Image 1 (tube, rainbow, N blue to C red):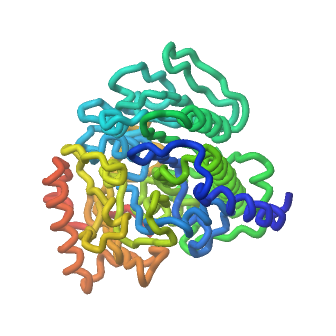
Image 2: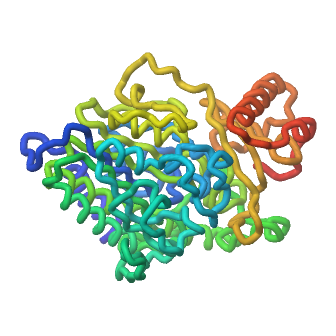
Image 3: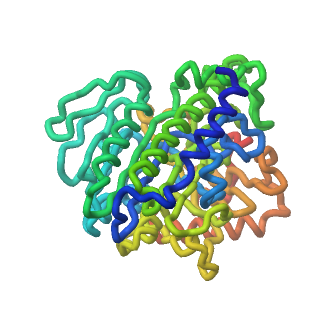
Length: 479
């Protein structure tokens, strides 16, 4: 199938999948809405239809976004797999939960997202990548480390996108699942949804796909929709220099040919998960659940894809930290977007608010449910906060230093351990190619951000040494 045929066929399929059930209802709605929270790994907001320079084909997500609510300034507070997941599940910032690297275990010190919904009378399920139990290759036994999720289908070694591995939820026996990993995870999700058709209580299902996270190896049908020779890059993309190769040896940045190969696979994986999302929406419709189910699509962080000479994530730049967050709310008018700053730490309390559940007192984020329901009285935050911790070598995927930062509607600012690092005007310079951190004309703004960072760190127990940092400038390249 060529690109034109794909677009034509997908338009018809996504039109049917994205619309909720209307006249015909097959299942009796629960008193509270069901919640389907779907998130992929490493899907940047920039690689979606409607975004500048996007080339990814995602017709179902495109329609879902346009017909519902898009939080256009959704920011991953800590753009790395396990730290974002820990924020999502615990409602705490990374140093509050003590999970700051990829190979750590999230300790059950507070009620998790699943527990909050379980205690409110929901049946809870989790399927896919977990990555919060000594990495992602160990079986999570029944008990507190599942954080309240009852129907448990966590997978191991999720960077293996074919013939993946999951576990028997009770015994821990390893099970090989033939085929493309997102498809098999979606099969499990559909089985969960089918079993809830006659359920007497509402449900929460979290589904976590690994693609478009590398390896960039989608099925050939999706990969071949993209002609490598025709792929283009953000204007801030650059290849590795000899100096770069000493610290961040990205093979994809050896040439534009290798980068186009990676980009082809990345876009193909986005198209592949878009097809799986369509299957989920169709199942909700077929089962008569669409009119009473909150549906969310998001991602844990983005992908640099060569921007500023980086691959992967962990950077404060837009390609790394801005992610999709699209939500369909029963009975609420769609076709809306919001530029309110909304971050990882806000997701847990917001899901509770949307479902009518009391937000646990431990949550560090804010409940945005009133904004999402269209209430104008909601007071939007001025900024959200960014962070990264340089981990031990065995945990460090890329050469990115420890930093703290802020993202406002207009600017991005960050400081590292050796000084102020970067300041970008995201309106005048959307690809963040001009670092203004040493410009005296912006001193007042920088001072304002410094005070906000210090206050935020103090309020959350972060020990970042601002007193040793703010008198100098970082030597680490930012753009």
